[in-house]
Image (cartoon, helix red, strand yellow):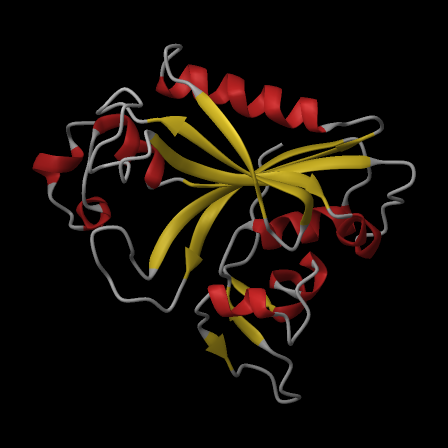
Amino acid sequence: QVVEGPEVEWDYYNFEALNIPEEHPARDTMSTYWIDAKPDNTPMLLRTHTTSVSARVASTMKPPIRVIEPGKVYRYEASDATHVPMFHQIDGLAVDKGITMADLKGTLYEFARRFFGEERKVRFRCDYFPFVEPGVEMAISCAVCGGKGCRICGNTGWIEILGAGMTHPQVLQRGGIDPKEYTSFAFGIGIDRLPMLRYGIDDVRLFYSNDLRFLKQF
C-alpha cells in the first residue's frame, strides 16, 4: 500500500514513537520547525522525515504490513547545492513473521539494479539510526568514475543513497506489535537525491526553480 501522513506532525510520531526521546542527541541532527499550535503546549512540528508515517502505520495497521510512504519533509537549513529547507522522502516498512536482514538487502539490491542499472555495485555498511537495530547505510558505485574515486564521490568510489535496518523492537512495541512474534525492516530515501545521481544533476535547487527547460528533460 501507499500511505501518506500529515506534514504538520505531533512530536510523538516524529520522535518519541521512533525511539528518539526528548533529550536524545539524534534530535540535534534534524533542524526542526516547531509549531506552537495547541493551548496545552503539546509540541507540534513540520515533520523532519516520512518515518513518522511508519510510526502511525505501526499503531493503526496489523501485520502483515507492506507500505511505501512518500511525502514532503522540512529541515531548518540554509539552501545550497545539496540542501533545501523543504524536500521529499520515501520510506518503506515491512512487518511480518520471519523477516530478516536478508529480505531487506535483497529488496534494496533489486531496487538499485532496476533504477541505476544492472552494472552498478551495491555496498552495505553499519550505521546508526535510533529506530532500527541493526542499522545500515547503502551506497552505490560512482557512475562518474566507475568506483575508482573522483571529486563527485569524495575519492571513495561510493555514493550513499539511503539508510535502512531492522525496525527496533521498541518501535514495534509502541505501535502495539509484539516484537517476539513479528520482525520488520525499514528504509528511507531522499527522493530528490535519486534523479540527481541517475542523471548527473549537481544542484538540488534546480528541481524547485520552475524552469521548464530543465523540468521537461525528464
